[in-house]
Length: 144
Image 1 (cartoon, one colour):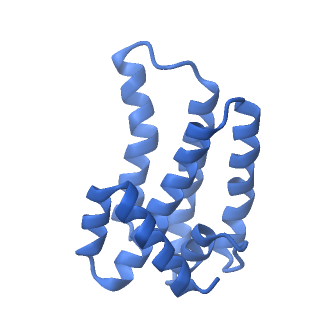
Image 2 (image 1 turned 135 degrees about the vertical axis):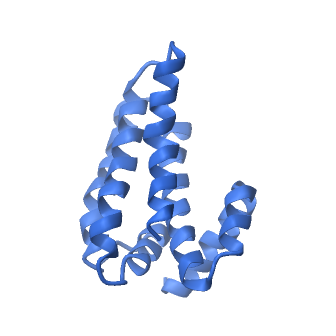
């Protein structure tokens, strides 16, 4: 899959699944739009793990794949997954990988913690989870 094909795939997926972020990305300049599509694509991949697995261990295995893929993505050698290909393209500008990769790793870790944790039982616990997931995603988007 080429980077352009990966971007088209993510554009269509975001349009169907996340209209608010789709419109925000659509009105961004082309280079930023491609990076946002990649970031939001990762967000949806990670969210899908929690939504589709019944056993936390299976989810952890899938998250481990992303944990291992991120350094390769940062090095410009992504596995053949559309989101990984798009992320590798997104990280190409000099210095962006160093800024964005730690945030992407934090997204994976937040999803891993949420997968193992009980549902939040206090407002503070819920706010912490939202900050770890959505807050980190928003912070990563501002780096693009």
